[in-house]
Length: 555
Image (cartoon, rainbow, N blue to C red; front, side, top):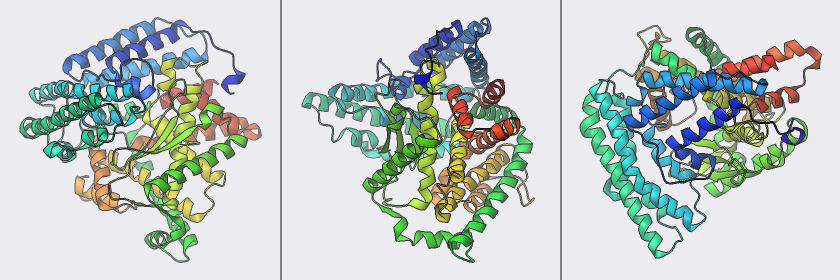
């Protein structure tokens, strides 16, 4: 059911608690205003110091106590209370485990978040550029607060892993000699001279702060960095629950991952023969890489192809397979200012004044792209993947409180996106063997990550039976299962070693969505309607996967 067919739901006490929590959380983490496109200062940072962590812990505890005292008035309330309590309690556990003292990796930690927020900041007005100048001036204080948290970890002998300290130090080298991202960001700003002076001063302050952070890592943190990469079963179980919003049997999931990986390999090998009779997977890849009809040259052409492909999917799927409201049909494809290699999605502003956006952060020097590899990426990030899922939650503002419209887990968001890839295959959008082969390439990588991540952090025996998982073995394992260059594979494996539980959440989430659909089909029999099932799931919004399973069954 679309919003236009629904009546506005009256706010309940549980809604008000959730709204109040989001407002307070935004005060503690002002970057949310940029991410969500809401009103308020766009220049402030979260307090990353121990005092800031303690303030967040108090908010979690207070909100949980308020929520526990209220009874749900309808099914929407039931989902809100169930999932918000899950999140509040879980985040308290994460803080109590002192994860903040060792939270460092090469992709998603304060080292990156404090810088990458600039990618989302608007640049269309002088005020926008003034906000950027102010945020750059505020970066040194934010990083100083984070240093205090890391120092508390040094005192407690609870520090990041040496491998991740080295990785982030490599990233900070771009700021050597007073150069790097911030100066590049403001170089071409069309603003008055007085504001240009502020921007350059802000860029210098932010660049110096990054250089000072590198010095802190080298001089203070590195000598105390832990050597052991694996986090162990207890902490891994906690992080797995955090990213999934579900409890899974990690040992059973590991064995399933091995089986799923073998299934992906067999399927890919079969399709390789369809692409070129008798070809191996590597021979099929080489054949496709030589096909000029599947090449895109330059980022401008890449952006145009992404936009055209996305627009076509939205138009066609909206006619038959989904109810796609008009505001959701606006999806903007972007080339990100950064050059990390990441591909990601950011949801629309709460009033759709800023559309949902699909971002491609193209590494320096990369100018050629293969459509057979990337078609499924557009479906994953756009429609029916992340954009349809997350923008639908924003659209349902008459039914869902503000917290419900941004809530969710990696397992829910990424699980749905992988489910969406397979859905597009079943709907005929990947009938070309090359495009289906590309989809399987990504699915095989996600299955390999389940095995690697659990294997490393739980100290599982290597698949060859000789010793336990280590970095070199993990690197060779991943290299043999993905079609990527060695630097990218190394980046990915470093990510898994420093961000436990996150990478497997994609494939495990997909498994749970597929299980939900199979259960719904079995229950409904011949009356099963895929469109109704999908819209029902989407209209629940972003939740933990245990909550989603319970909500679908209640529905």
